[in-house]
Length: 142
Image 1 (tube, rainbow, N blue to C red):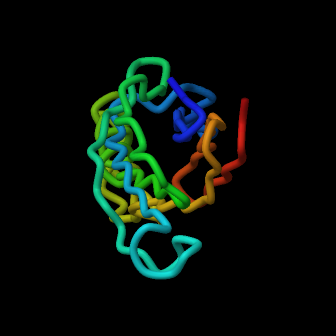
Image 2 (image 1 turned 135 degrees about the vertical axis):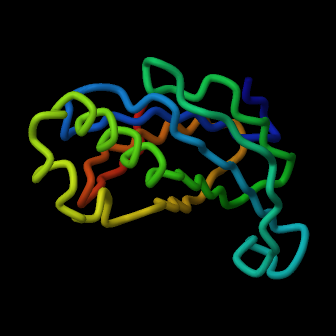
């Protein structure tokens, strides 16, 4: 819950190639503040706060709280294991089509997605990730 001195963050992931939420994606949350380095936070060190894994709805409902004074936030999404699992499930479902299963093509072009954004105290930031094996889009949601 946000207060006057902190911001809060939430996220969810939609696999646009499947039209479904992306379940089981690890998400790490990091923050930096203006208290170290430059006065506006751009020179501060990143502080890892912890993480979560997306649920069946593609949501992380238990991301850690941001420390007071946070000015910038980074969400790191580990998408490669998710897409490797998708490819494996597709291959298992198509056991009679080994040419597709063993093509050797990369399962994902972007193995991880790191999104960095600025925050102000008292605001909530919902950051949806729209994902497919060869691209992604992100925006500030509500």
